[in-house]
Every structure is written in structure tokens, then in C-alpha cells.
Figure 1 (tube, helix red, strand yellow):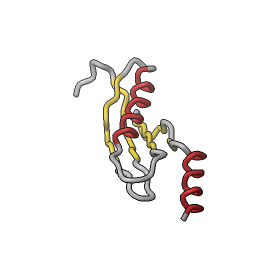
Figure 2: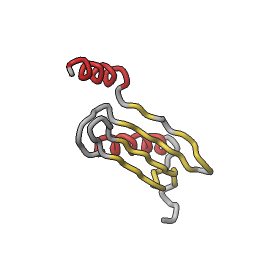
Figure 3: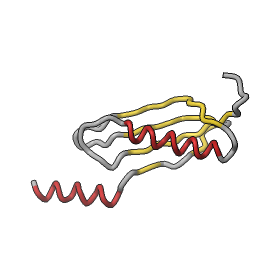
Figure 4: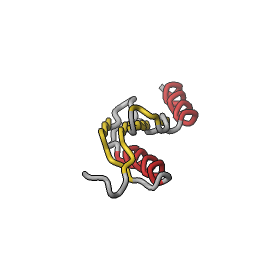
Length: 97
């Protein structure tokens, strides 16, 4: 049992948070996914905030704001980390909603 826990701990240290980075999908649509380094039971709040921060930074470089197309989150469970996947567009402040 100790060896299993040690293997899990080493894996987490080596992998940390895994992220796809911003990936172009379609015309003006992007995707960003991130997985938490923590295992256990918990909500996906932190990784959801992380993907929105990164998307906002990306859009701010273009003087635009994030418009959410789709957000999928999975809470962590035993052996499965929390994750968030965001599809978004960068839109001007003056864009109609």
C-alpha cells in the first residue's frame, strides 16, 4: 500500500497541472482544458478559475473579452483529478450579445 501511495505522489509531482494550452478550433473559437494535480474528492472550482484566467489573458492581448461557448467541468473522485474544458471566443466590448 505504501508503494502505491508513493507512486501516486511521485506521479503527481512530476505531472502537476496538465493543460492543453489555447487551441484554435474553428472560426474565432478556441478551446482550453486543464486538469488539477490533486486527487480525491472535490469540486472543479480552481481549474475552472484557471481556464478562465488564461482565456481572459489571451483575449485581453487582443483588447477583447471572453465569450463562453461551452464549459464542461468534472469534479475530482478517487483516482481522478478535477478538470475543466472551456470553449470560447474573443469578442469586442461593443459586440452584440
